[in-house]
Amino acid sequence: LAIIKGDEALAGIPVIMISALDEIQRVAHCIEAGAEDYLAKPFNPVLLRARIGSTLDKKRAQDAVAKARDQAEQALAELRATQEQLVRAEKMASLGQMVAGVAHEINTPVGIALTAATTLSHETAALKALVAAGQARKSAVSDYLELAESTATLMTQHCQHVASLVKSFKQVAVDQSQNERREVDLRDYFEKILVSLGPELRRSQAQ
Image (tube, rainbow, N blue to C red; front, side):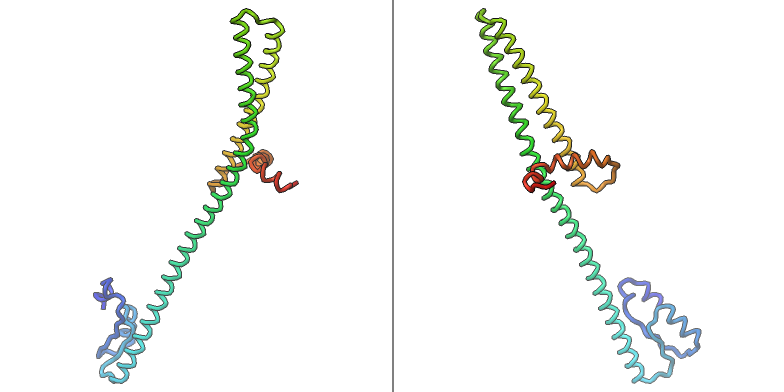
């Protein structure tokens, strides 16, 4: 019996012990060793067939329970994997909406800064031409300097706004794609979220 139960290929086979010894301790020892049942000699063939049938029914029931358990565990593992995929997909969809919103939000200040830079470039070329021709008047230089100062201020403001948007987006994007804990300043964090969701909030007229 020990050899059978010690072999992985045979361990699942139910065993009925038959012995001339009918001592209680001997019976208990056989059951503890892994025997499914025990019969003492001389045995009744009808009783033996009944015990075999009962043992086989019990084995089939155990196999069915084990199979159902394995199937349930597999289904649970697949369900968890599907849930994780859905969570990731939801995060990516949310992130995609945020990217579109931030891109729209960035286009305006970038466009203004580009227009200002283009204007400044044209005015600089015009002043250089006047200087080269010796026709640069003091008023023209003064007007150019005022334009350059205001344009530089305008470009700086909008570039800082873009930098702020990108910083907010990067932090919120990290939090959307990761589950790591970190300490946050709630006011600052909410402000970053509001900046990132600005276009959607304006369309929904949320207060």
